[in-house]
Length: 387
Ligand SMILES: Nc1ncnc2c1ncn2[C@@H]1O[C@H](COP(=O)(O)OP(=O)(O)OP(=O)(O)O)[C@@H](O)[C@H]1O
Ligand SMILES: [Mg+2]
Image 1 (cartoon, rainbow, N blue to C red):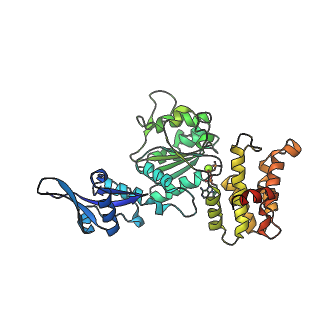
Image 2: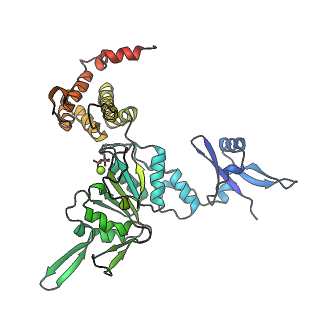
Image 3: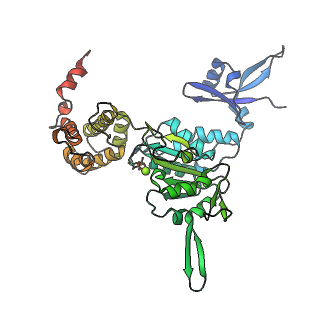
């Protein structure tokens, strides 16, 4: 009989021990032993000493490899079937996230894991925070047949999700199935339901049985007993909902529908993350200007969240990216803000309006060529406290 051989994987500051079948042995092995094996690139084998007590002995990694499935090759991403492969896929999947998508490693892995496990995924978050981008990136990373439906844009859910009845002189009345029917009939398909929160309530009703784990079928007709189409093996649904992180609520979407999903909340970017993103996207734009954009956006977000906040919404990452794009094309920060940001804020209330507030904020950042101007005096003073 073969002894158990485990490999140590570092996750955050933990050193986890897995055998080739994906069983976890972390709790059986002392931290020092795991850490040292990890650092030496060695595997651990479970042995028994003379008194019959188990201990873990360092062995070459080839011992582990001999007992395990081939190491997962990212270039030929396929649907993993056995557990070790699944683990390997999930935990090495951060490399599949496009560089231009800012998303924390844990969130991305959770997304990949949920897709691999065939969960219905609902990406939530405020407008323009990367939900659609993340969902599309996930679909690309999986290398499975994929289908895209923008439910926010469909006027007629029945024809989009079910199909149309036509009349033809020769054929008489006939039914043509929707692309969605084809999608759910495709084994292992990843089906993106974008802007589900903005869909017509009829769409939600139609999707109810499709998304229900106990049902997983689409009814072609409202009538009971009418023909149904089964959701094929391995189909994964990824939906997006424009719902603020503060209330993952039923206000916008039906509770019963929400319950059919696991929620992956997109985080709003911090100013550093946003600055990093803008610098990555527009390396030729002056760094100070991009920093100003990131800071302005960030300040609007904090302001909108505070109780006494003077504005109701923060600038989205989408808008920040647009702003930076205008800077790249030679517009000034004031000009770029005037066309992209100001129109999003109401000028009701004159000097007390949201628009006045945002204009003042941007003005603070309009530089005369030196970055010293970027902060008003209050902030310089408070920055100097304790310096
Ligand atoms: N986390 C992010 N990482 C990288 N780019 C982002 C991110 N969030 C937003 N963006 C930028 O903003 C644009 C809009 O993002 P996206 O369409 O994914 O937003 P959304 O959350 O789906 O918005 P909506 O709620 O309006 O549908 C992207 O094309 C990208 O340029
Ligand atoms: Mg979207």
